[in-house]
Length: 245
Image (cartoon, rainbow, N blue to C red):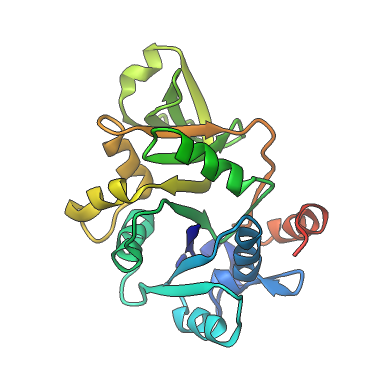
């Protein structure tokens, strides 16, 4: 299995910790977030990695060169221009290539998700992308029809919507995205006509009318987004209880 780790973010919510280092190298229990992410994915059988870099990108490159994780790790270099999630994935796939699905994981997400189980569910289905979601308190919600296919997006605070708004008049399910998804190369190739910079969620919403983009609901998902300094302690406790490297 192979995975793309989003590690190019500016980490503005983690300041001042990210004033002189990238978010991916902020330490948790004595190890960088990137270390924990790679080791966790390795537990589920991931052997090939792509890591995108931008903010203090040379530090991540040096870190990966000086640490042997026992797996293949490639760099997708965005130091010249931050490409957002869709653009970052598009550039990475230009290097990654291949015909196997790609697991995509945010570097600052910690969860009890069984990635192998999610991967197997994806490959056993006819979905071209599978997004891990749950019923969780979040202002941004993905909306699926009863068959689990992505149809729309809504910001509960502003009321803004994207996608097929007709779904709101039908039985639907509103779920929060976990920042973990699996995408087939067939769908990645559809990115060829997109600009360098774009959002992966906007791309999925565009594709949802003609492709099967599935929301995979987890009823027991525990998730911590290490986007703010006060979440670091909670994430550290979570790792000690749930993840043994």
